[in-house]
Length: 218
Image 1 (cartoon, rainbow, N blue to C red):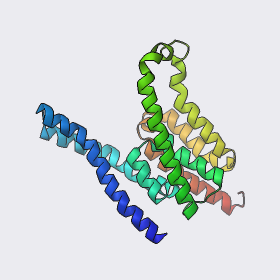
Image 2 (cartoon, rainbow, N blue to C red; image 1 turned 180 degrees about the horizontal axis):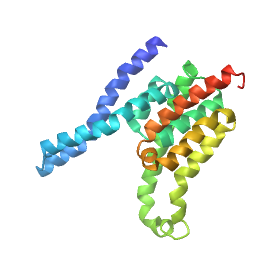
Image 3 (cartoon, helix red, strand yellow; image 1 turned 180 degrees about the vertical axis):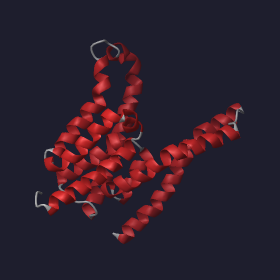
């Protein structure tokens, strides 16, 4: 596993740099073709502001999701994106179906396959969506279907969450009560700092699980 992980870190760093290069390629080509470049001062201000807002969350995501995704899965997931609403649910569902455990060779294989196929599926669906957007626009904008799109994410996470909650109902109590209280008292903080909230919930769950374990309630 050490040799495998060393290789994955080596290739993962290379492809991460390549991915970042591709992201910068579009604005760079627009700059070259049109001759309109960015304002350096405003660019630096934007970079610093975004770094302050999103860099801590990015670090927290790596620490939180890295063990679940495995080495190769982590690089692939962070390059392709959509971790919380796509990659993590796919990996967790795949792990449950085949019964693998974190930090094992089997989990590395399963998580990598789950992330890869979820990425391929996303590309296929987005391609079809772009191609069918105009023909399906009257149906998608209909008054009957329009309200449903506001609840897609909630319905998805509700179904996924219950699937895992039902096996550990005692552990759900503390984080569920906390997130409800935070959503009522500080809704803007919850919706604007979802990654930080996830980390807080994870820590609370660990502490609550330890308390229950010491009291022989698990």
